[in-house]
View 1 (cartoon, rainbow, N blue to C red):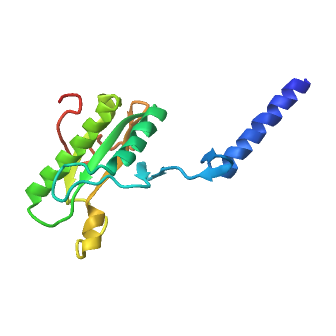
View 2 (cartoon, rainbow, N blue to C red):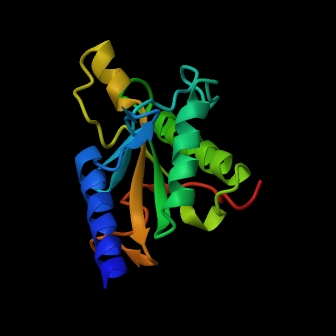
View 3 (tube, one colour):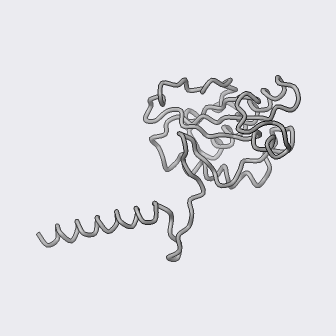
Length: 178
C-alpha cells in the first residue's frame, strides 16, 4: 500500500512538473524553449526555412529548421500526413510564382525523405500567391508572404476537419521518387 501511494505521489509530481514547464525541455536546470509551436493545426517553427531569392535553392541556415520538422515527425508518429505548403508573394507572373511554390514544397519534402522521414507522410503542395498572410504593399509584407507552412493534414490516418489532404493547393511531384 505504501509503495502504491509513493508511486501515485511521484506521478503527480511529474504531472505538475510538465504543467509548470509546459513540457519545455530542461537543460542544466534551465528551461529551454521548444524550437516550434502548434497553432491552428500547423507546425510553427521558431526559425524560418529560407531559399535563395527567386529560386528553389535552400539556404544553409534552413538545415536547422528542417531538422526540427524531421525530429517533430519522428516524435509525433500519430501525424500521418504533413502538408508542406509553398507560398510566394504577388510580385511577378502568377504562373511562375505557382511553379516556384511547388518546386520549393517538393524540395523540402524530398529533403525530409532523404533524412529518413517516410515519404508517405509528406505531401508537397504549391499555393503560389493565392494565400497571402499580409498585403503585398511593402518589402516586409512580401517577405512574410514568401514562406513554407507545415499543416497537419491527417492524424492517425484520418483527414482533419473534413478538408482535402491538399488543402486546396496543387499537389506537386512525388516525394517517394527522385
